[in-house]
Image (cartoon, rainbow, N blue to C red):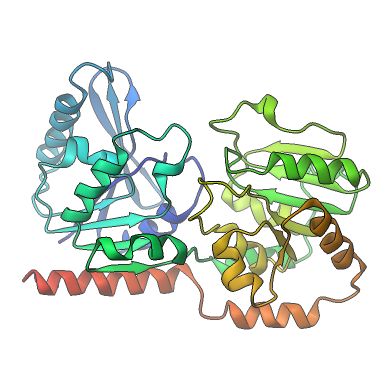
Length: 365
């Protein structure tokens, strides 16, 4: 059991998030092959080594001409070329079953990080493939407690693993660092957000608060996907800085006054567990969030994060936080709460569950 074949809907270099955190750790014990959804081109594949991972980039000439058969042949050719016989299959997207259902892994893992069927442009057959994946999977992980509650009755071996943190990385934001060149000119107070800007992003809340508080400045970092950039509110105090590298984030955060979990409340956010919540807290920055269930519990209930359900409460919490002259007691509480939270711990717990499956299946661990 030396190989993991991971099938994901996310490009490896899109945003450094849950798959990257986990698989770079599993790569210490396995050869990890990360299959991206295919690109357009002549039928082929190439392997790119990065972050200790083998990224398998597949090209297929026409997505509508025997897509399933051609993808299946490319996967089979890959296994033959690399002489891979024993492997574990790890799924982030059930859609990959369209061309991998014939594989015979020793163990099948489904890491259900989001409710993908609720996202914009989700394939109509996704739920059907997910039902099949639940039947095939030996163990299922969910990206949060709310998602676990929604899916716990669909599998006998399912476990919640909410978003975790790389504390050492984000605690760099607590140190004195020069401001980033594209942010240094932005006046304070600064309210910052980083993440994917898509149908989950609360454009209406941003528009209203930025209009009512013209002296507050909003720094928005991340790629815009699945929505028209023209839909985003525009104002002199809203600053879209585009995507940044994971390594750059602490430098930006360290010069914010308040961080934002700025998600709309809709079907695409019902089950999310935003990784940015503990990352902001590890950075030592107070957080205002909309009432996302997995932020309300536990962070809101523990009084670690402000939960704003309207522009009025958002503004009231922002004004309250900006009046404070010390965050010492709050920061001590944050550090105590996050003490045992890390991607390393998540990795070890997942590894134990996978090893238990191997033992149950009679596979030498």
